[in-house]
Length: 439
Ligand SMILES: [Zn+2]
Image: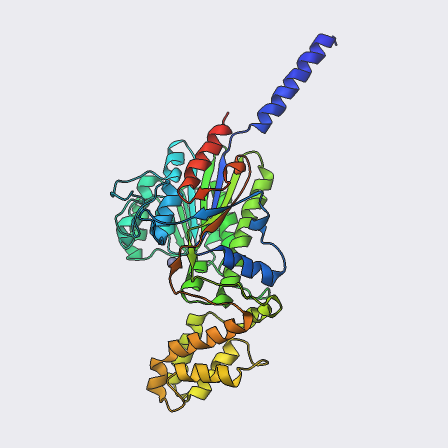
């Protein structure tokens, strides 16, 4: 072989290597923790004694979430910012502040031949997923939002059921060629076709032994990726809405499990990225913080107490209410004991002061069953606050806060996700990364 040919061969090889490094971004994975701020992340990481996978991604940027008016956002305005790249008013889905429809990144990618998938533990016509396909002045227009799924051509939906008139919406989807499988084992029965909705409420494990017939958010993520994977590319959004529910109910015990569930879904995304590193951009973000969680005085050594909580606050309230109704609980003292048991404080019972705080919130020692039922939620919240105070953590609101959240990114173009970042920058930067890493 001549030297000249060798040189040509080397040049060709270098060209191929360069082309490989400049491979097109074909897979965009966007993970959203609803109501998931830096304090929620740090609390969970301190308890685990390790970083979450999402915190090990190459870039991290504090991200502003304020709405168009510069005030605290809701999931509709922030969902629209993340999906469509515009700041809008609270309650508005996929429209700007003058109610002009704005195309989402998902819709634009769909037009370029990408498949689009949405997975959430919140209803798939709730604000965060809705912003990727719908354009409505109010997030409460649930049926109108669901009706827009076919027009945007969402290829795959997985997770929670639809809210609103769900049965009519499923019939509408089926009329538009969707296969709707509503069953706990839906993921094992996915058809080999486009346009699928796997309705199976994601299950979040509270202990490693806990099993369920329902799939986890990570299992939903893997199923969605398998269903969407194709040579022309896909966009997948995965949301855990329950991090937000934990914040609204000031339930740190639920929160830590939901954060881990989100991180396990991120791990499923990273496993896919490891197979397609040059072609996959993976983003983890949040729409806002919920609960105003303050961890400044956090006592790291005591945090494992959160793992002893038996069920989420709403379930504890429901069980207590039933026991009052059935006269299995009749006194404030009995309720306090029940709360202690549910919070896993049997070995470390309430102090006299804590006990008095909870009893006062329940209406005092003389409260009768109907009085106890009336003040049940106040008493239970007091019990949670006493537990949290031991841990040096405190919620400051039942609503959203204006705290900046963190956006992590990995993959080609991830360096574009640097500070300063606003939530509305996210889709533009994804598109910029895609144009920089185009053929
Ligand atoms: Zn919320």
